Length: 445
Image (cartoon, helix red, strand yellow):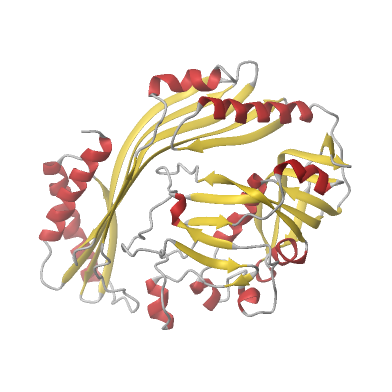
């Protein structure tokens, strides 16, 4: 059996053992996260690190006498050893429950049904990865990280629910450098296509050639601006910082509070939803609750739903929608519009073409105002023609403006921006976003 099949068997064995050893008055929820990953780090178009990682982590939530204990521990995939570890950590959770106060918003475990989804990929064989990347990148200063392999999660609880999700995917997150100048791109998916990667690389090389032109320094001000999908993805990440959290709204920390209270509006061209049909992550949350396959959060500029966890639902006496405890989008999609790729520069006319943004943060959360910097391949455009790369600019812009009356057009195509976080483990999820044409995007430095 392969890693995925082995781990499914091992997870069921240790979870069933643990649940079978519960005492009267105890309930438990168990989550698995596991991966078998190849990491290859490049610098100067040469391999700097080549690492294979296997890890398996079990998360245990024990409910006892109105108290809740949470802990996690690693497992091996070997049944006898894992059962010993489970016995040890179950005793630790019991001791922790004895010391804890009662949890007033404890969500009682229920049976949320079963699900079983395994998505097979078509990844590069490990021994072919290096040549597939470095050969077409010959003559460039390429730096980046390739990561690929199976990524798994599972959930069981003492009420009988059982969920399984496994996928095989990869990403190549890279930059091409020309001295201090650089172009950033990403190629990701579940099936490696060499022609597609070569085309992605060719586009980056072309942008790098444009970066050789003399740099233009612009004065602060408001400019007609096109945000490519990579830049939109960075801006959209701000919606994960409590903006669409019901708990954040109730506690006064949501940037969309004025939208919810109908004090502000967004453009009818802007729609954002959760869409698990993209296959980027699993529908079940850490409690094993199944989220709707799709759910509108903002539709044609109007806020339709906050993400509401069962814990928030209990605290505030409202209906939950199977959001995870952090109440952030896990499968975010911004819907496309009508602007065609070949018309972008023509419709931009004269202004800024921004491929990427970074260092984003709130400058005024309650007015949804964000600040950040331009990054990598960003250009000045005149009369529909790229003229020159620009010196870095700092922007300070309200989402109510740039996604409101100043949103001129949204592209008819979208790009997937996968999660590339590898802190502690590879991450599920990502976004699917279009490009956007904006009037009077504001720059301060």
